[in-house]
Image (cartoon, rainbow, N blue to C red):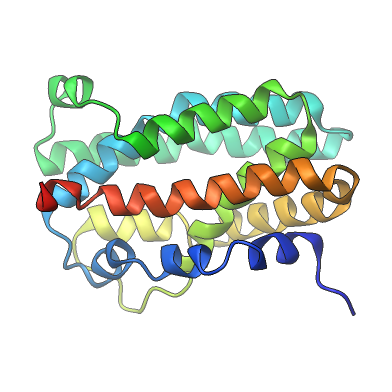
Length: 216
């Protein structure tokens, strides 16, 4: 049996996909050893994605070819606006990151790149292009989160970020994204591959950027 289209795309990004899933950031987060300063830098930058990400979800909803798919995507958008955004706000308070600090921190290069990629995919009006980016943004996180050891870290900032990406609702949504990409992606294979590969490279660079301040 030939591999699924989504699996073929992921294999074509190696070793970058595995490097991201096994990154120092992931290991330190899952063990609860990550420094507060590094976690704060990461969350400030990740929170910047929400607007572009919801734009991408909106484009996927608009370009989807079934009512059921639009419902599934819409429910996930609701989760991002509620549970996930609530986590960010509580985590910022716990880490002592105030609104001014969040607003004044410049976008890291991978943050700017990923925001631009999400908006570019949205602008194509191609369901396959939006699915390619969503499969990376969500599938890569499911991949590392499901590998996290038990018990979870004692600090909710670490534990809840893991559990947000390792739960039945999230796993089901990623499975839906993969099924949809397998279904429509082959019809626009070159476009989907381009967005998928660029998204994986940006995910890896995004994790690297967490530690850029240490190297400066």
